[in-house]
Length: 267
Image 1 (cartoon, rainbow, N blue to C red):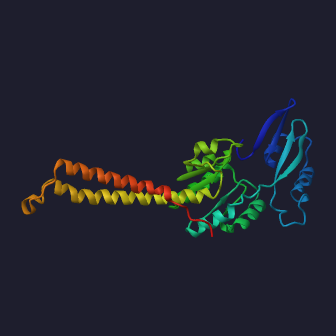
Image 2 (cartoon, rainbow, N blue to C red; image 1 turned 30 degrees about the horizontal axis):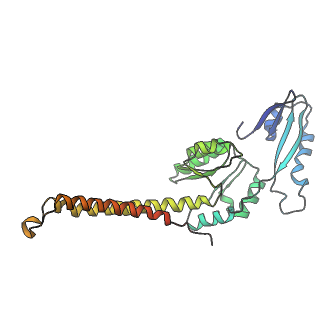
């Protein structure tokens, strides 16, 4: 169940792994509140006294007929290019917002490391809540690009103005199916590279459009004979065809120069 957990049959018994309330709702028997509070201490046991003691998210394990039987503390490893990517986006004047289903303390730790301010941090979100935040931003007139790589991100990727999926062969392909752009290298830095390439492409489009308009504004009247009365000059069919081919060669060559495009590197 996206945003809550996974339910499966193991050795003839149902087992649930996921959020505390979701697991407890399915296997309430033989589990009291004191037991649950004891399990919650797993968040700190493996890292007590270190700076990362709040960076872990806990998933709970429940078994049919027994209730909640354990908890597992997990911590996402930060992508090596995450901090530089956020910095490059911010230098371009793009607001970076963190949407996560993890608990608030874990998300705040990650956000601090990559340079995202507290007002742009959103934690403990379901997939529907992520989509709700994107809808709110769009209603306020913002254009939203969503970057994600998991099944929980799929609704938001589909809703955003531009959905960008990080392709990971080990994960579900729902994110890739919903996204507008798929980063085949599975590197977060490619988000900025894709943005730079898109801007360079639109610049070429405007250049080629300007050339085509200017060419036709000048060439069409000449081909129609506007210079014939005063200058005794008219285009022959062969000359007109040659100039048309030259115009096409210019447009294609200008477009091919995109192959020389290099994205701005992080400083």
